[in-house]
Image 1 (cartoon, rainbow, N blue to C red):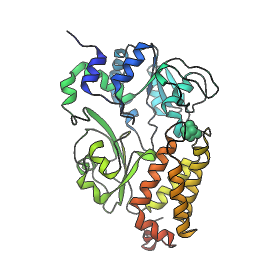
Image 2 (cartoon, rainbow, N blue to C red):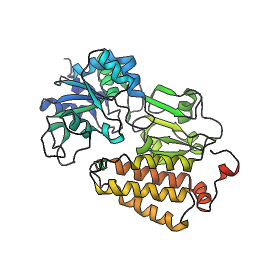
Image 3 (cartoon, helix red, strand yellow):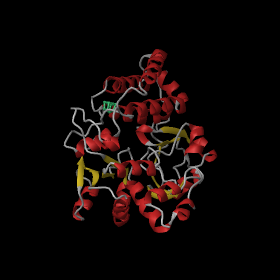
Length: 363
Ligand code: SF4
């Protein structure tokens, strides 16, 4: 007897490829029960991410097939406004949800809000997304399921090639093929087909290897963490292994830091950018994230001495779990990992110098 697509996805062990790693079969079953509509998130919302666009360019027919298999109502593709992805989908006559170019705009509940005529801002956590939620102005939304474009493609592949084929990739706990964007200081940046389990150094080799002297990787962008380059040989690309370094696969973005750029300045710039990206709905995010960015900037510029360090650590501890979405949590983890991985370098900044600048390397 043929199994349903939900059962096939469950047996395959498919989890969301957008970063949440939530079991797709659970979401799909709930969405079918309430007749939800499907929003395919192809925004590449994390810094440096490019795999959603890659999926649309190469596998649009597969994504379409996966969307049909979900048996959900109206299908809409969420992409950032003015991008090549939007042009591609429009040229193919797809329903497009044009998403503003802000970091939190592509968060799942922000997409649902936008789809229902509201601003692309994350909604509160009180109601369940699949069954309909309340927008910030109190309106009820239609039931909606948000799946990442790669996740929808994997549904089609499970139906076409079977559960055993899918499980022949990855590990028992993290099965299936997956895509990763490798960017920054590598010789061949791009999107690569991979799986959970290969040595992290093999993955970097696929991208032409890191530039010699790179101090660290960032895995997961602004919501991710830093991993010292010295730790890379001991790690494989899986949540299980990366946990040893406080990291996770997340949305599948690896950015290699340049050997001639100051990592502290890089973090400083990213936090300054993040501080302007709050949707302005929650205090911890509206005030806490800019305060973290300001404190980090003072540390980076050698202002305020050791007391600024303490303030910064305290502020980081106040962010997690207090916003309506996970943006502040991600910023807290990102900053904490920078403080750990770049501790010796930060000490020199606190003392008023930068080892790279002294060597005439950093800009
Ligand atoms: S935590 Fe920040 S980004 Fe998330 S909903 Fe609140 S204000 Fe918006």
